[in-house]
Length: 246
Image 1 (cartoon, one colour):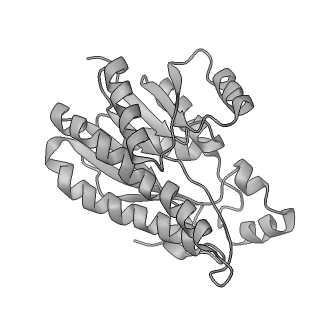
Image 2: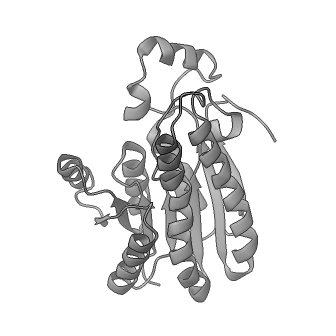
Image 3: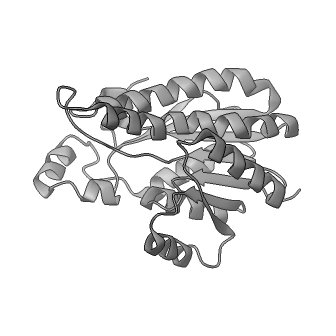
């Protein structure tokens, strides 16, 4: 059997890079699909992933036609697209009373529309081949809500609704669709939060620390394995106990 081909949107971010590396170490050919606007970050990513079967492809997940063109290119060059990890995401925080339409639209177009755009173009090939793994990276804030993040929380909650609905549509054809909801992790976004605020966040995390990107990546690797075919429509929380439910 040829190597599984995985696409990770937002693949050159801190979390995305760890997911790419984890999937590559598990024997997958990995394409990190991300914006091509930061040459230094792309160069750093290529250095971090050197020696692994990891490639870069420029994309804007908010553009439906661009997503279609990238999926087509990957199919032409690699023969299949077996694993899709939707990890692209942005924040444009502000209380609802101060939030403008641009802040709302930009977050929804990347964080939620991007999931539709990629899945819409990738899922047909998965169904034709009788195998597929889709993992959508949601957030604990999509489960609990967060002050100043009505846009982000709505997008991340919507992502899991999308996950469950698509999971029902494709389950009988060997395609699974799940979401992962990370808590606060050691990413550039979180580490940019003032230290006193991070300390307050940690007070509410039962394990008493931030998560590591590798811990999120390990969960993604598990869900995308060939023998993980009986898990679908699930949301896996990886949040150190910050939010618990059943």
